[in-house]
Image 1 (cartoon, each protein chain N blue to C red):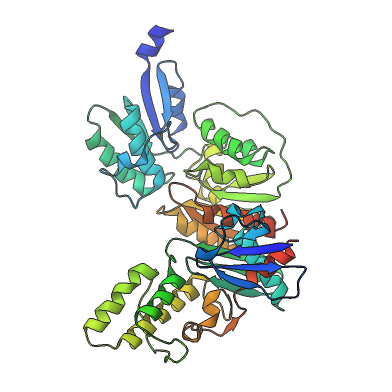
Image 2 (tube, rainbow over the protein chains, first blue to last red):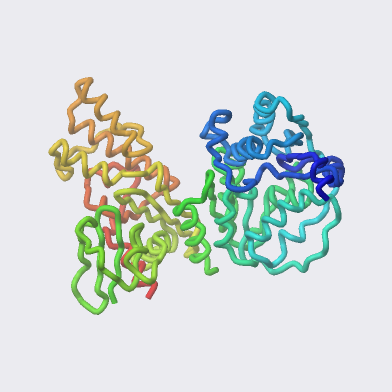
Amino acid sequence: MAFSQITQQRAGIVGVPPLAVMEMLAGPEFEIFDLDEPQGKIDIETASPFLPQVYCGILRTVISNCLAVKPDSIYIDTGAGKCDCAVHTATVLEDLLPNCEIIRTRNNDSRNFGTPLCKAEMPLLQKMAAITASVQQPVAYNPLAPCTATAGFWGVPPRDFSLLDLFPDTTHVYGWARCMENKTPDNMELELHYNPDIPTVFFAQSFCAKTALARHLAGKHPHGLYLDCDVTAGNSAKAKIQAFLELSGI
Amino acid sequence: MLLADFGTSYCKLLETCSTAPPRLIPTRSIDKSLRVDIATGHNGKRYATRYVNELTALARGGLRLIDDESFTLLDCGSRDIKYVSYSNGKIKDMGWNAECGASMGFTIELLERYYSLDFTTMTIPKNSFSVTCGVLGMSHIFDAVVTGESEETAVAKFVKGIAVNAYNFAKRPEKIYLSGGLCDNPLFIGSFPCPVHSLGRFVLLEGLQASL
């Protein structure tokens, strides 16, 4: 056991790398770190010398994680399935971590793995954690019974998962998070999909290009609320979700 | 039952079993040992066992006071601005700007005292400063005064800038129902680019009554 730990390579992933990459990283010689998510109690301000403070909180987290985790290699998706900010972050990482191999990927996968988690009944925080964890599993999903949706969450996994605690267990997940579970992060048709019959929160990280899409779709949705948050969800963001759901009769 | 809206500058208290109107008390004068039955406002959790979210209280208050199925209700307080929009009786949109709207009402009150102005007699200017937050917008006043503009005109442009900012934040409705302490400020109300119906500063208390 100790021998395998010593020989494991620390592989970081940013975004959803192509399935072929994830199949390769699933081997025993790799330990995977999802650099989009906080890898323990790491001060996000350690990223400030390398990225502007007014920048996507997820990518600032990527930098602070990299400084703490010190991966041997990083697979960073820089295609349309991620964002332009990731393109530039990859450049920063190349200069910042000269001993780390930075591999830029473009995930154009179109095979649909399905979205059972997005439609299942379970606490939204756990559901989102399972969706992000599913990126590291290059295998077919176990079937889950879908529930009748009473609310919707559209968007990306937030930097601060605590805001998800406010939603009912019967919340369906839409947007890029659904694309993640489906393993097709560049599927615009799936990303644009929402259910107009349920009150839906359209979420994006502050300073992310997806704020435009989230706000646009919230305006089109007959019962949608646009919400953006930076690093942590403040009282006003949580109050908006709470009031929106409460006043929608949920 | 004692209901309270604990605001940044003023607290509003209502005893439901009394016919007396709500009491308005400066927040700094509130007894720290006070306990109420239901509270809202950003200081409210400290004083009550039951707390109602400010946006929820605002929406419920609006539903009680506004005889319209579709409306936008904007609350401008000392510290922040927030709004709710209803369409055909259903909640449509809401917002709470606690950061960029910071200190708006507070700043307006401070300027009136600092420059010894009377907002009830001031003329509403044609133009406004571009103001995204009370604190940052202050520099426009100082710059204008330095270049020869009267203090009164400069402050009026600042107040109008704040009104326009609040109007944009509420997504430019055709008509605004206004809540909060700034309902008593004719310069502020007259500076909106749309008709304004003032509901006064006790709308959140109405919302708490609806929560009983």
